[in-house]
Image 1 (spheres, rainbow, N blue to C red):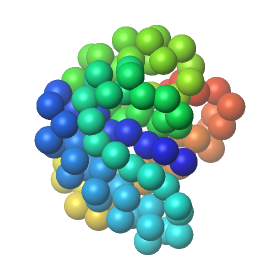
Image 2: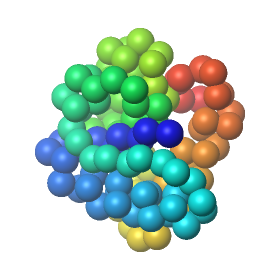
Image 3: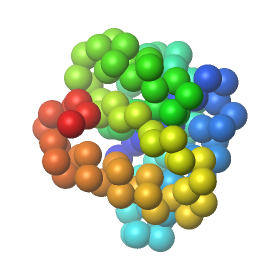
Length: 107
């Protein structure tokens, strides 16, 4: 599973990505988690899930449309940066991919 966490400049998404990676590893999941920007999401291939920072959540639909269903696109909740162990973000991703494993859109 490849996950990209995006924000305006890639700085705050780095914290979320690192925490999610640790949470996934603790759960025994071999996930690749990276941070980037909206441009990174649009230019990359092979991304299963794009997590969109709460401060740019208004762009989630545009990202989803541009990716044409190739990735789950999920806006992060407002408190995502306070998820210090990555467990809530991990649950968000797991719930989304479990709810619609073949449909690459947020519920």
